[in-house]
Length: 170
Image (cartoon, rainbow, N blue to C red; front, top):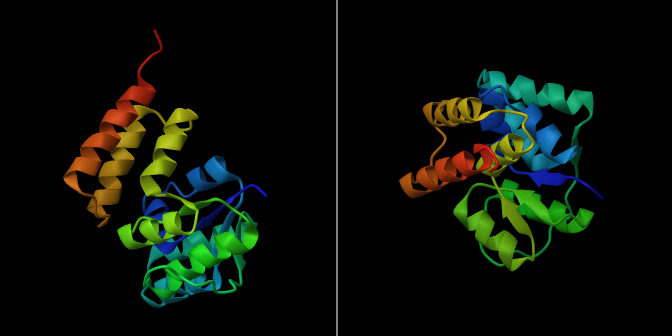
C-alpha cells in the first residue's frame, strides 16, 4: 500500500501555508487517525482556524482518509494523536509517518517506522519540481511566521539541502 500516515502538525502548517496539496503530490494517499481529525478539523473549526476547513476539504475530496487506529504498545509516552498515528501506520503496514515532534520521531524509529516531517514534504516537492527554490524559501518563512518551531541548526541544514536539490546539474 502506498501512502503515509500524518500527525496534526504537518497538516496544520501545510494548510496554513496554502501548500497542503504538496502532501498529495508526495504521497498520493494520506491517512490520519480519528484523533488527528478531531484535533485538526473539529477543534480547529471551533477555534475558527482556516486550516481546519482546508484539511476538511481534502478529507471530502478523498485523498486524506480518516481511519480508526487499533492501539499498539508504545515504547515511550506520547500524546493520543501521536500514538494513534504510529498505531495506524503499523496497522496499515506503512513504513513512513509524518511526525515533527522529537518524542514521536523517536518512538517511530523504535517501532521500525521511518519518521518524516513537514520539511521533508517541502524538500520532496522541490525535488519533484512542484515548487522552485524561491517558493520553498517563502513557504519555509511562512511556516515559521505561523508558529512552526524549528531549531536554528535544522533551519540552516534544510536551506543547504534545498539549495543542493535546486542547484543545476553539472
